[in-house]
Image 1 (cartoon, rainbow, N blue to C red):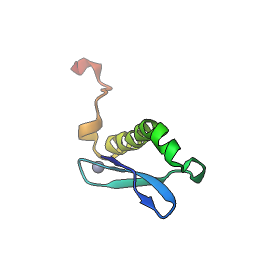
Image 2: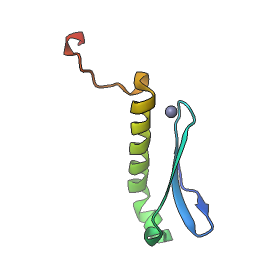
Image 3: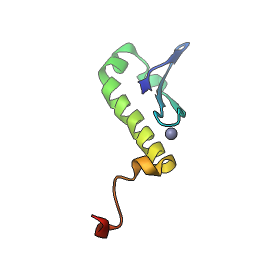
Length: 75
Ligand SMILES: [Zn+2]
């Protein structure tokens, strides 16, 4: 779901929604754009990417994302 495409000297992280195949892509800031940084922070970037995906799911797929309920009487 999370990919790290590169174009020329620029690096990106990209997430794809498993539900609707929407893609989100964000450039990794050039000052972080070194192989060492990517190796070291790959997991952190992945978490940020997943956060974007969760926001998308909550916003676009409320049937999937509405894990929290505002109606406790239904519990
Ligand atoms: Zn989606």
